[in-house]
Length: 116
Length: 117
Image (tube, rainbow over all chains, first blue to last red; front, side, top):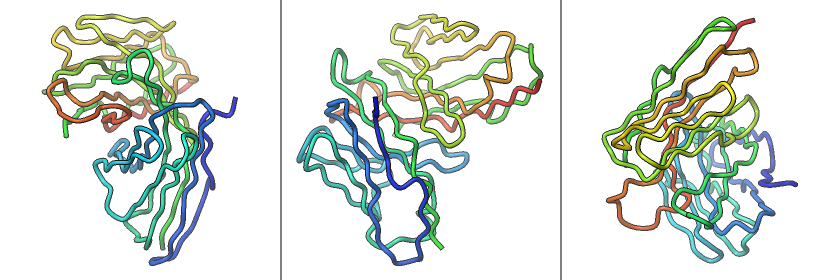
């Protein structure tokens, strides 16, 4: 029962470097999303996807790209890392049955990213 | 973006005490979820409340959804050290918001609870 798997668990980048945070789920959930968690600010939505080939922006999308080529995978790309992107990143998935609007999120264990 | 105000931000109590965490908004929601997060892990769902005035119990935890579906509370009776963690409330977009709502939960700032033995 893997659920939502995120890799890596920790990453240190220098300003300007790029990287991809990986996320995979094995629950056949249609919806996947990326959040960042900063002290005192809860979790803020970066990007989300309602199915393969469909993505949209959340509350704080700048500096991040996503794609959804399969139901299982939803990678998050940082094109040119900045210190403001230092955060803990969580990937989450949810199902649509019986009530997609109120479906709970299933989270991975996060990636702690530091940009120096 | 609707705002979910959670209070208090920090709670430090002794084992056996009772506590209440509040989650308030000016928006009306179709539901509200409560999550608990431990260090190094992702949030885990505790409960979803859907009906105005609804009360749900999970052992020593009691969750209530306001009659107007704008607020919720989490009450813990006789807290134990194992209750220590970050508690988060979350809600989907308000009922009058356009566009898709799936997977687009908004979270409160969280309440960090520490229960001392």
